[in-house]
Length: 314
Image 1: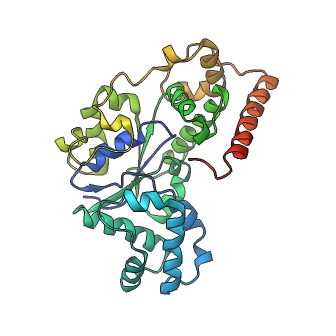
Image 2: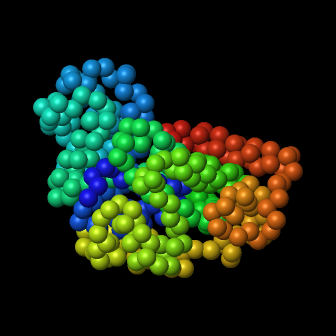
């Protein structure tokens, strides 16, 4: 069995949480129930923490980690308690002397506490940084889940203040950036490191899609991942507290106006087609002044939210 880390990635609102809960039901896989968010910033700023063989510097790393992702570290690690003093001593004793070692140490200890041999993480935006993650973990594997961008747009609008997306044209560019970057970086990886699946396939044929994922990860398919809602597994996200909703796709056909669909397709039509999602219209680009207006509209709303919510997103 492979033992490298597993990263579940994709554009936000694309089904990453559903896949996370399915895979963490596997007896071999430890996946925290939230999103870490700290791996990229900590790895990029490793030099700022000095010599990581020194306990004081290790403690500074863990403190920075906690400042960034306190809720994740307090509630989403189910195999350990995030005790900075205890973890500092343990990591120094284990000879963990790099940022990679410290981050891996946290996930490995959590996996051991759950009695599982392999760790993973679900943080959607890591899809933009897969090349860096593979440099840091050469044995890593990535599962990129893609969802019809028009349904993603609807879901983004439901949390527009969190994601800063206020109109369909900007939603299209947002989605396109995630899926195209993910495919480009994944396609450049050696065979066996990158798998792309579609959310709609996961809904329509859960067993076949999960078998494909298990084969990619070199683990046996087990029925437990089909019953991810068993006691203790229901998550914070309402959708994963329910059975798989096969009708949770193509909602855009009834919930988006014709103008919204046209504006989305004008921003990401080519990507929709490349990822297997047929267009309603031609997908032709909007005139430059209209595109500029949508960007300005989004910026004005985003700037206003910063004024009325100065402490940032919820």
